Length: 162
Image (cartoon, rainbow, N blue to C red; front, side, top):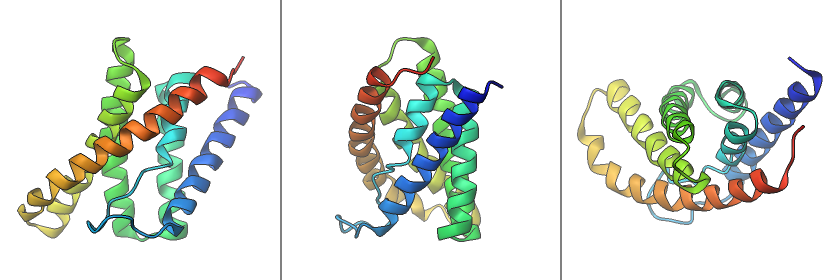
């Protein structure tokens, strides 16, 4: 791996971790618990478009593990990992098709992240009652996905990596 690419990956991972920390310090702005903007996904969508899916997966995985270790718990690791993996798979497939913008890819990622977290929580808590929570998370995932997608699209357009 080239030094420049590794450096960009390290900086992108650091950005994702900083955004995760900043987001953890922002009080909830909605009455639904667990709803977040997912600011760290700006770095993941950027990496997906500028570096490739393997690099985006590495950045996402490292961020999830480190943020869970620093600011979360073992449970948050499982929830975040499930969401991140499902999100990244979906975003990678949509991006690979070449038919969708960063915004659409990001919205799909936000929605899939929430679905992955609910699925993992249902498995861990051994209940399917959490499915009633999903409509609220799908709405928030869509809204957050649009915001994250717009910011990511601007970054992809303006930041050159050569």
